[in-house]
Amino acid sequence: MSKIPVWIDCDPGVDDAAAIILAADRKELNILGISTVAGNVPLSLTTANALKLGDLVGQAYPVYAGADRPLLRPYHDGRDFHGAEGFGSADLPVSLRQAEEEKAWEGLYAAAKANPGTLELVTMGPLTNIAIALETYPDLPKLVHRILMMGGSVTRGNRTPCAEYNIFADPEAAQAVFRSGIPIVMCGLEVTEQAYILPEEWAALEDSFSEKTRFFHKASTHILEMNLENGHSGFCIHDAVPIFYLVHPELFEGETAGVFVETQSDLTLGKTVTDLYSDRQFEEKNAFVVLKIDREAFLLALLHALEKED
Ligand code: RIB
Ligand code: CA
Image 1 (cartoon, rainbow, N blue to C red):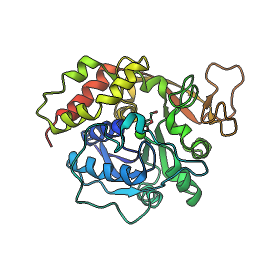
Image 2: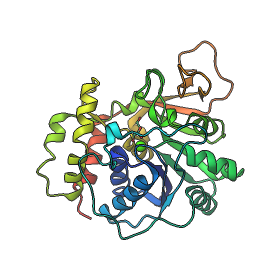
Image 3: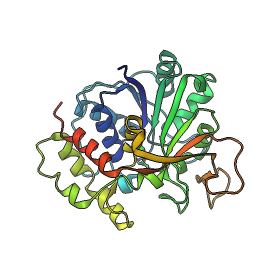
Image 4: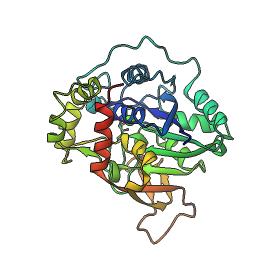
């Protein structure tokens, strides 16, 4: 069976780390490259962290640094959840590898050209790199098969009362992506907040012999506490959801919808407006909005990836 060509754009980040560990364990996937963007922590750290994660999973994925700030607005980090360096209270050895010379959008475009119409683009951070790629390469939408995005929400927010962080961080970039014509699988908060690890499931990881598991356990200590304080059942491992969707779409439910981004109002800036449940519908149905996940199957797959010795 031929492997699925995949490009990951991310801002590692604790749940980005879980997503990359899961992706590395999936034989169905061929991870062609990892691009980084300023998000949870500044670009220099997301880039260093992506290199460290490749070493952790024993894969020398080429890493391409991208935008160090949003297209137009000030940069807002996520250090309150992910810690100063991006991996909570954990860390990994500094990689001896370097990021590629080419910029994120250059690497992404080259991968798309080499896999015309089949490249699966998984985004797990602010969408600045993707917006720059769309602006720079007008033929990109013809080359990318789908964008599987961790981002947005139908009814809720985690950065404001109505906006999810990845969209809020660069709303103009997100709007460009939703208007690009590339089919989007939107893994928003409705489904990613179901993808949690319970405190007791997390606690059981502490004495694992696996370096990946011990790293994940330590890295997620603070973010688990923050999620519990916000009323969630455990640590919501947002970014691993689009990776799991890629390999097991049958374990999800969702609906096709039109989705576009608020970029004008201060009150609702960064809100993904969907026409789900509305009498008035958008003309364009540009997204499949994922709404339900088989949490147990998801967690089993992640635990397998964490425990597997490379
Ligand atoms: O809202 C969750 C998203 O914001 C995740 O991608 C997390 O890593 C942060 O970037
Ligand atoms: Ca992320």
